[in-house]
Structure formats: C-alpha cells, structure tokens
Image (cartoon, rainbow, N blue to C red):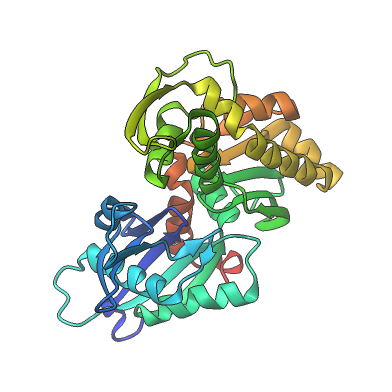
Length: 340
C-alpha cells in the first residue's frame, strides 16, 4: 500500500455500444445509455446518457446526438472521452478534497484490434485514469455468471451485446477459441426498421425499433407465453401523416430470422473448432448466454434446437459482463493473467 493509496479509487467499466455500466465498491453506480448530445454551434456536449437518449431522433439542426461506440469499439474519440469523464462524475466520490486517482478495469470485445484497444486506453486516460487494464467481454461474462474460469473445464459463453456477439470457449483461465461477429442488438433494431418500411409502409426511428424489440421481440414464431400485440407509431411513407399500426411477435421473429441465423452459424463454427476434450465438457455444462440480446424471447430454445445442448441464460444478463469486470477488479491478484 502506497502512502497515498487512500486517494486511489478502483472502478470497473463495461463500455458497451448500447449501455455503459460502472461498478464501484461492488455496486452498480452508473447504468446509462452510451450516447451524448452536442450543441453544433458551440461544439459543446450538453447531455450524456439518459438525458441525451431522450433527445435521440428528436433534435433540431443545432443539436446532434452521437453514439461514440459502434460495433463494440470507439468510433468517435472525443465524444467517448467526454462520455466516460461525465459518467465517472456521476459516481459522485464522497468527501473527495482532491480528484482521486482512478484505477480502471474496462472490458472490451475479444475481436478488437490493437489500434481499437489503444483508443479505449487513450479515452480512459484522457478521462482521468491513472492505471487502465482491459479484460475480454466473454471472460468477464463467464466470471459474472459465476463460472470458475480457472478450472480445467470447458465452458462456452455467448455474449450478445449492442454492437457485437462474442462466442468463446473458456478453460484454465484463458480463451481457447473465440468468434466475435458484428451482428447484435443494433442489427436487430435495423432489421425491425427495414421490416416496418417494407411491409407496413411506416417510417420509425431507432428508439421505437428498440421498444418493439423489447415489447414483442422473439426468435421463434411459436412461443409458450406470447406477448400481446404492440401499437407502433410512425410516419406513413405514402401520405407523410403520423399513423399507428399493431405488430405481433410472429412478424418480428420472421424479420429477425436472418440476423439470428448468422449468430447460430457462428456458434456452430465455434463448436467445430473446439478441441474434443473441451467439447465433451460443453456437452455436460451446456452453453451460457449473457448480454441484452440473450433476453430475446425464445432465443435459448432456438439455440437448443440447433445445437441439442443445454442452454442457460444468465441471471440479470444485461449486467453479467459488468459484474464480472467488477469481480476481476476486486480479485486483481487472482485474475492478473486474465487482465491486460
């Protein structure tokens, strides 16, 4: 312990395409959408997180909303840096006479390049971090689910986030093989927007597509507990007049089929490339699902039908990765070789 170690604060960040979650003292202290709103005239950022999300799709020419992360990586460096800084301020470190030195563990997609990795580190440094470590999302998800990743047992994790789907086989504290595909929640939203235009002649925004996915999104056209129809409001493409239509889960399951098939293909590919001894373990342990995309109705059943393996959905899948990052931070010495 250094002389000024009491001035150091340790935080874990799940820097996601859709949401950013910060854990401090084993508690989720920030859970906000990864979005910022900018005043074009002054070049100032006027809102971050939920406040900026309320403006998304409703701005005039002087304000624009930016999602700094795309496909799990930083697309807008300045906005990302400001967003991280503002979200750290939301923690509200108590009794801090001085700005605390920040030690961060940030989780990143497993398919990230060296340049993209550097961008994450640079953004965190600019936001005030003194020490930054990175952990791969599938590893963080496995730790968050409660799997003992250090055991000589194979476990398969599928983490479906906003920008990427991470499929990894983990054993002995390492990723044996992994597939990172850029098909995830954002693509589901885009599929829904396109379906509404083609089949209902109605234009909807990204936020409305997200709501439809949550309310009636499904991976199968036959569900045991189907959700009620959902009323969608948008602009009629023929008349330009706002209108309402009703959609059901079967329509949404049909429009998401193509993207889900790509995830299925990636899962089968990962299973093909798994060493036989680990395949034997996965037959017993099954596949674990984490991330917001895993909450899609019937997705676990669909993957079970495709792979014939047991499928387990994590408890609170949205926060599994963040929780695992927090555990890795708390047990830094134990997981040193997992953290870069």
